[in-house]
Image (cartoon, rainbow, N blue to C red; front, side, top):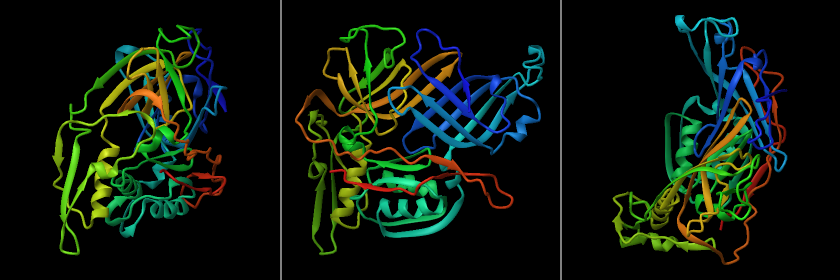
Length: 400
């Protein structure tokens, strides 16, 4: 593997970025962005200063491995494929690296890119775990998934990819999914504070440790949105339905009340009556659960000195504002940016509580490190090598 983004700038946290792409001109890399977002493919973008005209087509679909090493945790490993290349040429800009194509953006998708082929299948009375089990075999991936997810009565996968079906099933069950490396990673936003995924501390200049140079997690920018009903996200919700017993049932979001033991939960003064069909009270509760899992009273975009390790489903600790929103925030997305020795991370965060009092509920210990990925060295005729897991781990964990 080739180390890039050197030399390190003094204000950038200590880190190493290593790239392994067969036949790739790593010397032309000017910038690398690694974007992780819930329910989406992991995405890496290389910005190249000049690209050989033959490489524009030669690069497509070749396997990519990027390793971010930070020393204080496991960092991050991206395994995927070049999805498409966007070269540009301007006659007024001369040449870059002896090429008329002065710049190129090389977009890569993670190992989940192999799950994009469309197919038709009907899933009846299944759980997300059942779908994950099947797909982990089909695509030779390991998985980590809750073992107590609700039953989905029916999902018709008509001309949709397995990835689209999986994300739909997860969202409708109040869960989220990613594939990092070669592991299908399913997690529950409602219990993320107790999940145990890799964390980090993000500190303002007024934090106890103060401003520092070359330290990860120093906050450059913070932009938040705070309010219980600013978009109807945490309104109280009710659903009415006729059960198979012939009686009318009413299901309320308060029926789902649970606590992580962290902070004071926020609810809106408004009530929504949901116009959603459900086959049973259990199915109605599943749909209310799904709605609450993606309802955020507080959201924030935070830019910091470079941090690696946390992923969507992690919880990070914000300190130094001396406020009721100091404390644990859920990571819904993060973007690591490497450019000419600099390392910056942008977080998309959310929370539904105030304060940081913790009532001592134990960590669920749902997180554990995934097996290493490997490149399949004996591809089928007419195909390229693909990323698979070195060990088909089946990690099933509780989320309550």
